[in-house]
Image (cartoon, rainbow, N blue to C red; front, top):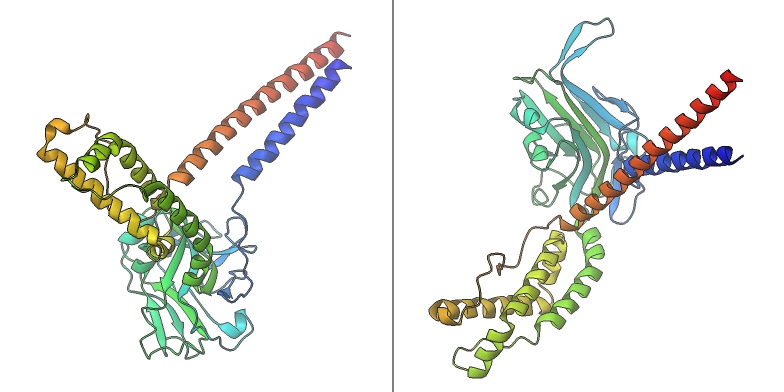
Length: 371
């Protein structure tokens, strides 16, 4: 009886581990494709179109993505087929969202997910022609706004899936496209030269127009308010640097390291924000405080250069830089490390459970055979 109970426990551990592994390695949650005040879906990539076929195993939203393989592939009879790009796909909005045209005048971004198996190899290919196009003329090349493949690849930071955001604002001043009645989209790349030996897989999914700035501003505003309060609490009591004041000089000599570390920690936290949050920060008094303290600390550092006998022990890690303009990835990095550690422990438990079950079953079989 005890052996059976132990076997059940081990099997339960295996099942639990398998479920946790599957959850950890499964694709990200599917994105919503419903129309909102800040988003208009154009195509969910849920049906074959042009030279693209459905991929129902690897996608970012809905139930599928569109996939195209650029290079030499095997045909049904084993023959080599060279895909050098075709008229990839095109659609009228009435065929995908059931509306003859849409008013995109309040939208500022064309967004979609793009998968590239080898972005460097794709960037080296020369196409006879290529273009991703939005038009209000009901067909291609009529009242058109377009982007080249190079503009898409510029946003591909990794092999695999990348979220692409193409600004509409750069084209809103043009009279070529009527943004109040947008109705057609096409993406094509033809006549590829310098194809690599290994075929390149290209996928696209969840094509939509968004008011990206409004979306991000709504998400960032509470975070900015919290950060502004933290800056004010942490830095507002640091006095203005004055080399002629013995009292101020004594305060800086005593507290410089603490003040510098505080400023550096806040700077690191700001680096983890997106660009929208950093822009919003400039609307708060805390941004003024942050930059003012940076200037004070720099002036004290200059003072120490002139009076090296007052300088503390050197600390190469201590730097006071400008207000950052690019987001960082520290939080995600530590989260990934934590998840990796959890997966390693669960994997070890699964192996132990497998060995235990195998030995018990083998012992049971030997006992039955000897009987």
